[in-house]
Length: 123
Image 1 (cartoon, rainbow, N blue to C red):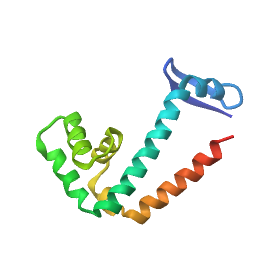
Image 2 (image 1 turned 60 degrees about the horizontal axis):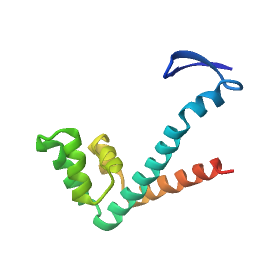
Image 3 (image 1 turned 135 degrees about the horizontal axis):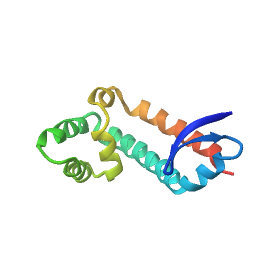
Image 4 (image 1 turned 30 degrees about the vertical axis):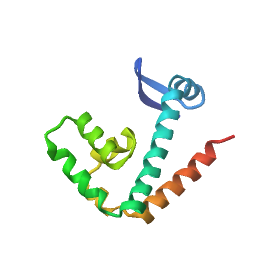
């Protein structure tokens, strides 16, 4: 099976049997970082819900209205909530409706599912 993918060298056909490993090798560090960052975000979101309930959403709601750059908003949230830049970035780039529909149980389920999927990757 061949699929067209965009790589750093442009558009190319990917044969899953032969080229997938090459694409994976080229991007392995970035993939590992993305996996680690998502885990950090989920853990920190769960902590926010457990420690502050929905109150932290008010701080998130205020951040975009402060007239600051995106980086300043991330810094504001990071410092104000005691979270990483990755989690602040996630919060700022997620719709408020999506965030307000979350709760500790949903985030815990997301984290459990994520850990289960990561467990499948470990040899």
